[in-house]
Length: 277
Image (tube, rainbow, N blue to C red; front, top):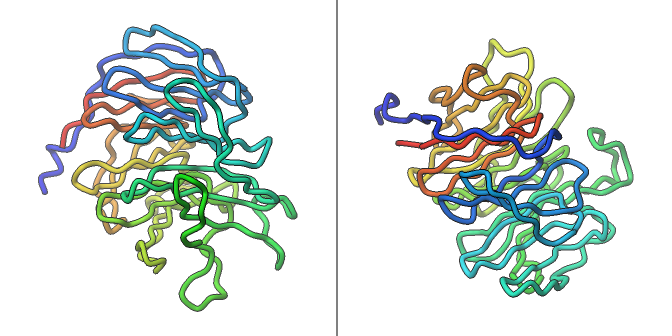
């Protein structure tokens, strides 16, 4: 692998409001769905900054399937919701009493959803806490859950915020642990813990906010506190910084569609990059 070939060059920058962008989900190489913090609306933008509005719904995360259906984690109603291309809305699965966080489509065209209880503080655990990733079908049937390591006792997550399945079947989870150092947890599809990435040793803080994977199975992680985008090997080893504070500030959400990388930040700015590898 020639790391000099892994680059991101800016093509467009525009603003979508002035609040932290919580979700970006590209639908093609020209358009992206957007959700800003505390918003009850899913917006849609393209590279020319043309904006439209979609359904009003409380969103923690969303993903677009190959059939163009939109699946949303509705934290207010503790459910996974499907929005069809025709505009109809249907509840796929109630997650109560757990609150759904991140969501992505699995390689098998099913769904992975991160879940958390409300019985304790978000970054604190007690014996009753439930923090997990659930694999479900598109109709809501539970296939399996990822909550503990192989010993059945050691927890995998403190607060699983975002989830993404890599093309090699591994599951990448942004796990928030405390205010200073959080982590990216990489699991095999069978549930074995493969590695944990906590940033570089020189960093006093590492706060991953989102994760995407490219066609070569490399893992791209946004670090909101340090204003860096990290590139990791499929095994979770640091390779290089794709972007730094001179190119993107406080990145809070990302989406990668083929060679188009969308990055949203804490102030509502959206940067569009040509990603080459």
